[in-house]
Image 1 (spheres, rainbow, N blue to C red):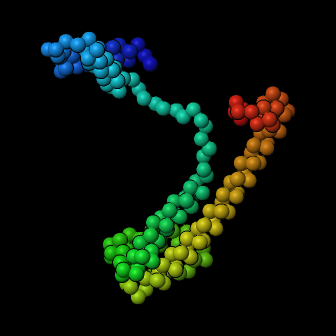
Image 2: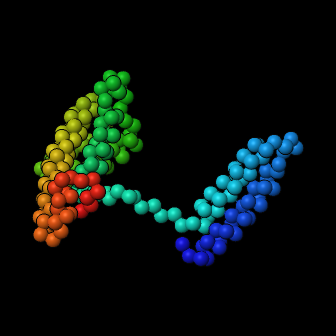
Image 3: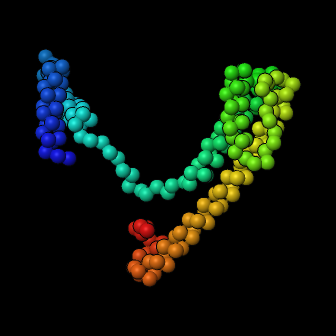
Length: 195
């Protein structure tokens, strides 16, 4: 943080302290403990408000995140969408003759067609209008599409897992030749090891 920011923070704190003191004057019944609590609350509020105004907030996670590949992330999103759509076709809803409205079905249809177009060999088309007569067939088709996506997810997860294993095995081999201490730490699975 620069000197200008600290100066601005200092001025903001002073201004907010004065505002808070005017806003919450001392009580007529003087009590040392309540007055101390009041002053502490005023001070705390002023410092936090000034910090929110003047101190830049950038949070970095202390733990390094392992990024999921975009392909796998896309498959998870598709699976989530399919599961949300299938929720509207649950047996309890269908037994009460509750099917998605026309506007809901049009939204679902757009998503289903977009998802199904990304899979070669998927030759089922969904009907433009939904009724109680074709509801069970549509549910079966959506469930079949979900099964295909689940299989693709498992394949992508296995592929990614194998890539990660190979990456860390190669890293250990590199550490063996370049940095023996790091290799020993990783081999013994010590907690402070950071590749």
